Image 1 (tube, one colour):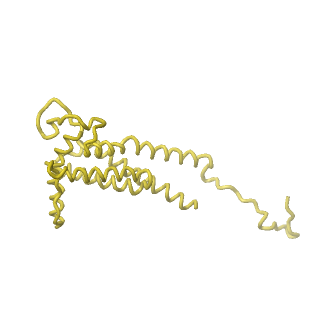
Image 2 (cartoon, one colour; image 1 turned 45 degrees about the vertical axis):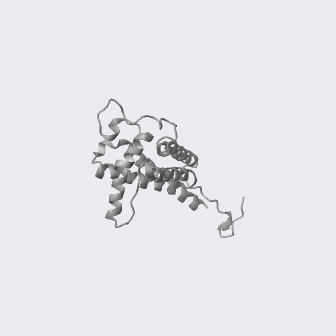
Image 3 (cartoon, helix red, strand yellow; image 1 turned 60 degrees about the vertical axis):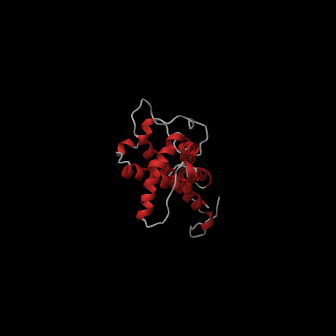
Length: 200
């Protein structure tokens, strides 16, 4: 209980603070749990494909990377489906990725040329593979930075498909899905970070 002043006023430090009813407290942990689960799912399901892609670029014989080259991957007719294994990625790197990247370098006035042949150890493929691994690892320690790197990488890949290969957007379902996944991680991680800073 408290003792009011003679005029009826109540001492300020005895005022009861009304709880904020704008949002039930019980819903906050649930929302955080859903967001954390979504982030985890995005990192494991679609974005882990970057690890497989990098493994194939470095000729690691796992997850089908050591499969044979499907002729369809290099524009020939055959009864097979490309799987982006080592043989296919290295062929793409030498005959498509490198000319596209060197064209961009020339347009930007940069005096550097990528190489991706057997004689140089498929240098450009290994550079891309290293960026893929770096971006994916950062997803777990610095999510925004990792997601930004993978988003930039996939933006370049989509540009390559649309401008160099002249693919139609509807044929790039996997690429757009990976782009959306990394963008989602970047936005969700930024939101979580902002809430932590505000809470602190």
